[in-house]
Image (spheres, rainbow, N blue to C red):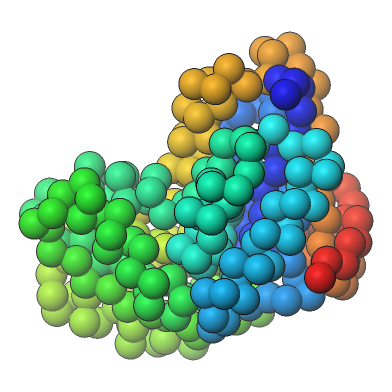
Amino acid sequence: MSNSAPVGVFDSGIGGLTVAQEVIRQLPHESVIYFGDTARVPYGPKSPDTVRRYSREIASFLNEQGVKSIVIACNTATAHALTALRQEMDMPIIGVVEPGARAAVAASKRGHIGVIGTAGTIKSGAYERAIRALEPDIMITVRACPLLVPLVEEGWTEHEATRLVAKEYLQPMIDAEIDTLVLGCTHYPLLKALIADVLGPDVRLIDSAEETAAETARTLATANLAAESDADPTYRFIASDDPLQFLQLGQRFLGGTMEGVEIRTLG
Ligand code: DGL
């Protein structure tokens, strides 16, 4: 496999662009192909089998495009499909759960971590398993926050309605006195300021996007797959539906890095 091959990044839709953005920022010489499954979003409420099937289809499409590694930028897809893709694909596969869990354990001062995510991610127990594998006795409080994804997609990242919803979801975490909160969904980094405001200054927020990009850098280096330091990167963005809406929302995440969007239907 060539070091100049692109890194594949995929998500159920646009949210994974928070991860792609960090990969582009932290690995400025890596080319990236991003696939957003906008035709089948959201993955959060879907069954593990369905999410695994979608993830396999996307991984095989990215493989056909010649990627050297795949970043599953979606927490729900990581929770349901990381193990299967690691077994089935002949390249490094990076998920968002382990990096987030590691950063949370390192950040936690009083040993009480909160995790928020989609219904699928929380029900899977993936974050609890990953955190307990590192620190068996740590306290963990989890909460599914399904209403936050549509509010972010509506662009309501600072809206009073979003603050009320976030407060409702997070009050049990405040009462339980968590000291660290994992933002276990692609969309939540866009609510970082609002969530920090609701939780107050004593709670550390863990952004899986930053941690996953750092993990991608380490994985590529270990596998001798990192791009050369003089490589000129290229970026492709592909959506499975409505590329125009993807472009408009995507530019909110990525600005000018996203010049256009291709369309590709899978399944
Ligand atoms: N990308 C999903 C995640 O991180 C959120 C959106 C969805 O439900 O598909 O879990």
